[in-house]
Length: 244
Image 1 (cartoon, one colour):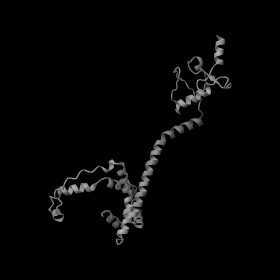
Image 2 (cartoon, rainbow, N blue to C red):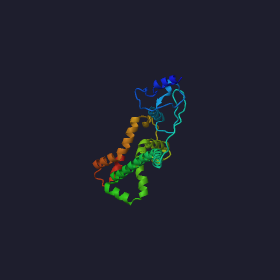
Image 3 (cartoon, helix red, strand yellow):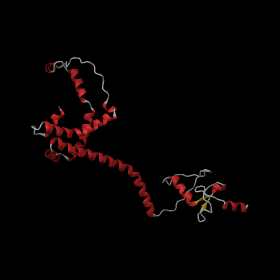
Image 4 (cartoon, rainbow, N blue to C red):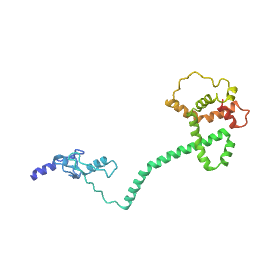
């Protein structure tokens, strides 16, 4: 019997790397579970590496033997104060990183909207006039009002308010005789027009709406300077372009 046990020790091989004593005579061998035969031996370093791969950084995860399903009882060495503080800091940082990333993302979007709103005010009103208006305005009003400018431009493109105004006009024009005298035939029935598809249903149309809304103030300012150069007010030129 002792000879048989000695022969098994001589024939042992690691079930992780499949190496034998002849391959590495200095490696430390362990029997961590209830397995018998050739599967009961494993290198200490191989077992630790295999456990680390299974835990994937979570030291509290349970790991069992793949052959006998015996759960390994992992005992870690006692941590010193420095290691404990570093481990605690690592856990706190891991939990805080998603919130920090979300805050940075929201803050970046917010300040981008603020910058866009300030540039739009200076384009539409005029560079000097826009700076004077923003310097005289309440800082809280600027922090709330400037980022709403791109939002309102996008909503103005998304909401087809002209259709709602036309429907109200046709609905109540017969009740207001002054409208019939100014705009004859406005209340007459018109042939039915097939409903148009929602522009947001197509991703290309949605992209065009977004880009068009954000670029509109710049285009309106340029076109206003070209077509209404006789008008001194930048704001009036932009309004005239809007109602072309």
